[in-house]
Length: 400
Image (cartoon, rainbow, N blue to C red):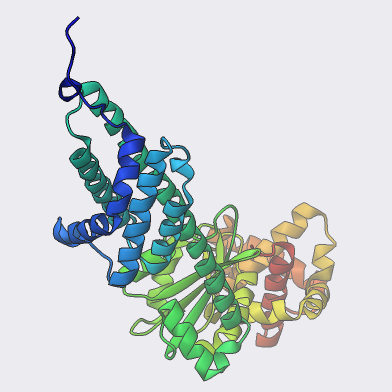
């Protein structure tokens, strides 16, 4: 056999781990190359305005170092890498878009790959595939760790913001808006005016008393608002600004899925707690078929709701003998009285609505007067009778 000289013996091709260890001495140069690539390769994708150059350089250095370390360790643990996760959390807190971070990782992977190839020399297709597969498995794994950490940090931030927003609205509803300093702070945080008139809407109903996207629907009409879920009801704080209460009510009504009460206008965040209580009162006065009930339209009902014991006594005093009748006769007389009062005490006008003759209406009214032991004519008697009928409806069929 012929002797083979040492010069003719091919040198072994280093594997990915050996190449990664050899590139470890080039970290400073690789970092500089990555920094240059971040700001020159499609710079319109770059949004590191909240990150100092030194901070970004340190992040690039840590990423490149970790890529080489994982490559030297055959890629073990890349998908749960703590360095990539830490970078993800940090950049999320700084407000750097996730897309910018993913692009930086891809650029870094390309730079490491080029460095590996510079040191690899001649290699077979099999060696090339082995190193490439190992290299991009590491970068993909670290990218996965980055995304998981970044999104987790974003979710935590959203939850913190939501808790802070919830607490802020609760403070406004509790009356802290009377403090001018707090009102100014709350207005800034909630993107609503500190001054000017407000309405409050309170809605109840399952599973969703107000349509999702109510704030957006109001915003589309130029109405600024805040939606807040609060135990058994949903609250909307609505800034009137250049709009009238009637205009806001018209926009709100189709957004109500359950029952809702709307407060009168109040002045600024200082009176939101009062408006909230009045909106609840408006809701308590709503009829069975009402969608949006304005307190401004229901003050007699509100007075009755505010004094339920007196309302119950009024019902018994004014309607007691009729309520004691058998159900069929009771309901006929109560309905007749309700329609007659609504028609300005005109039997002729009430008859068509009751589907009977005018004389039938008169006979029923005489029967009611006999049972009650007093005439139905006269403003005071009619006011008392009207309030009693309203109170009975409210007590028998509470809203919400």
